[in-house]
Amino acid sequence: MPHPIRAAAAAAASTLLAATAALAAPGAASAGEDDLSRLSAEEIAERARAELRGAASLRVTLDQDQFDGGTGALEDPATADLAMDERGRCAGNVTLTRGRGSVELVKRGDEVWVKPDREFWEAQLPGGQGTAAADTLHGRYVHGSTRDGVLAAVTEACDLDSLKEDLTGEATPDRGTRMTKGAATTAVFTPVIPLLRQEDGERVALYVATEGPPRLVQATRTSDVKEDTVTVTGYGATVRAEPPAEEDTVDLSTLRDRLGPL
Image (cartoon, rainbow, N blue to C red; front, side, top):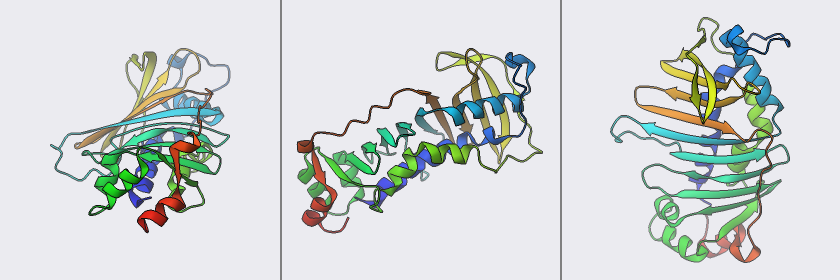
């Protein structure tokens, strides 16, 4: 497997963490307060963080929009859609920028199946090796283990426990940078309250549901050159990470035997 799979999968996780970093803000709401209008922005963020910590599963989607005309390097995935749970199951896809292809992935415990498309192989492997890889696979998945260093990033992108640990870690935003509440609106067809802050020259907006549990449903991080939008759904939903049929897979070691080091 080529190294860019590792970068693409890791970027999906790191962008999510960056976009929701403001949830580490201090301040706790009393258990009896249910009306978010009575709470401060920091208190609402604390409640949203608690909901994330308690989720047995999540679905995370990432979209990026670049404003500089497309000439600058943008190495993160253009889009990602990953569902993951505490049992080590994960399924979804990552699409790279500038026509560099996409990768579907399935993870169950230590086993991983990844299916890059032809555009991915041809963009990532030099000469005719990318075409040879695509011709060898014929649209099949590559099967391997997270213990293989090339596939380890799938674990990084799909590990729900690691995601929660990063979200609720000791690092907190600069106490001098306050979070404010915006006007009530909707996001992902859900009534929400925006939590707004400026951070390192970027504008961060967290959208927390005002009906039902105060869950984070969307976050945006906007700079002068791009905007990342992370949508968080599927709190506690079943993650369907079904392995492909055996005839639709090729073992990673077999692919290496045919094509050489990847």
